[in-house]
Length: 398
Ligand code: C5P
Figure 1 (cartoon, rainbow, N blue to C red):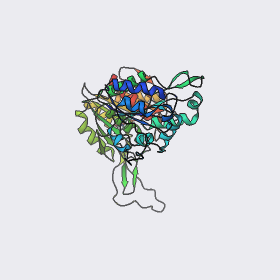
Figure 2: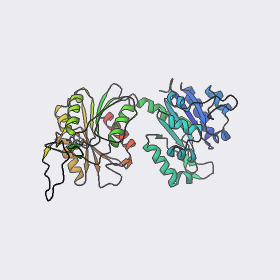
Figure 3: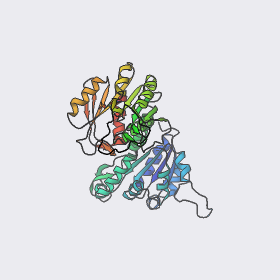
Figure 4: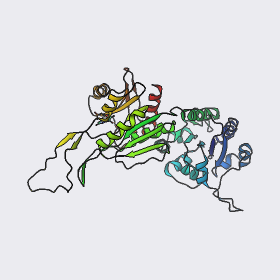
């Protein structure tokens, strides 16, 4: 899977840098083209001479070459790469990446990288367990980066605990698995709905909800990373995606979302209904701002919106998989199962507003999935990017 892949190997300054030499050799042996980028303190642990000899490329460690003034473009490097691996990633580099402190070539390259980024932390157990490191790692995960968890074992300090950089062989396996996963949905078309819908009352008011679109966008991005052709029908949100093979169709109302989905779904293999669709819309749109009348409360007559998931469920073909969401505040399991059957879904993802960290606007979610064959899987609280991975894994397994 690594043959011909362009990989940036970022090395920061920790004892585990000696393992980066083996990692570099294994990547080259697997057929990858590797460009090493090293931090100033990384050079204290391992010399650029060794790394450039093994990679066959000069090691990048400064913004420009002092004697010639030659500029090393981190932007070009970021565009060249199919993956960036930072191993070892020290507490300091992790903190800089999490907060965009671009004071060396490794961090600027990380910030410019368009490709997936894999981070293999290595540090002493107390540094690893410190709340600031933990928070920075969570931040990096929430940006969609992959953390190659450190192993437990004897550390350079002779203390024993979590902080040993994962072994180079395991990192190579991790990368190979990742590139294999990029083929999993190749040739498949996935429809995702995301965000709220706005139902217009007058030129300045609408009926809407708090959905941020983060979960739906994360699902669309994960499906695209697995090689799918993704159409994302999105209600009004303040986020965007930069992943190339996602066709984003922006809509405002439930009716517009419905009309696009009904057109697109027949050509899809999967439909994932993540949008928080407004249940009702005003019967009439008032084209002038409704004025406040003295002592009179205006009445807005509502009409039921189409249920997009139920409609797609009714036209679903045997080769298609349809997934819905249930955001509940009470009777969670009962309501989720009711929706699963009533809308003819293959899977429903329950998130309860009773769970802190789950639901609208947050960067995390806690889900339970129910399948039409009666199976149920409960997951712990995770970032929305990780939840999206679990959901895509589930539909692929199905
Ligand atoms: O019935 P309820 O709104 O709770 O169902 C939630 C599921 O149905 C979600 O997957 C949501 O995207 C979908 N839905 C829809 N069209 C509606 C209402 C909900 O597609 N009008």
